Length: 236
Image (tube, rainbow, N blue to C red; front, side, top):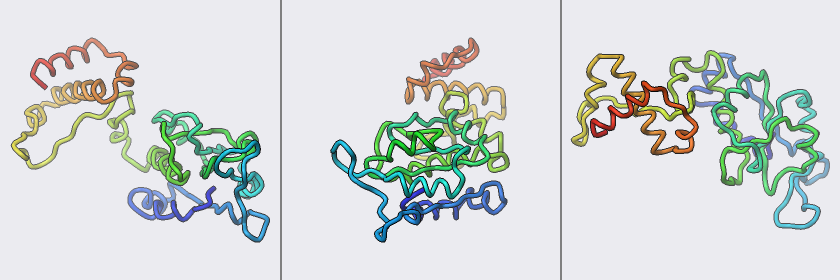
């Protein structure tokens, strides 16, 4: 649901999402809210009651647009900086739904009566404000569709950042030496047990440095404490 559905159209025609659409794993429909406005100017916003800066999306066109896709009874996600913070577990929850209706906010926001009547979720992609709800919606779409069965190899998903509460370990590829920096010896050793231990230790280390909030919530096993200590004793 958008005043500018053309912003999102290109996203579905490139890369993995395009292949997912072609395979029938994902379907999408862009709905132009202005098509449901009643006046000749197709007005979709108005001044807020009580005064204040900015404009508010009117309820009538948006309600008619939502009714056109039979939104009641479906998972209706309204994108808003005042919503619940989006994260990986939230993405996994949304990915289990058969159908999602995403409502793209604009201006100062959406008439509260739409949220009260239709919304099942009010979601924020972060503690900041963007002018385009379409951009926020694409973040949701991208995080969710890749969790749909058959889109991405399950093993790849299991090793990503945030899947188990930690950030992902660093990656290296050819050449073996670049800018006088070598690929860590352990990755060239062929010893898969040592590689797994090193990668886990690097996950812990990176999370502690970059996201101390996540690290504080993670409970390390005795083995993980040992691996992290060994890593740091080696000067990494």
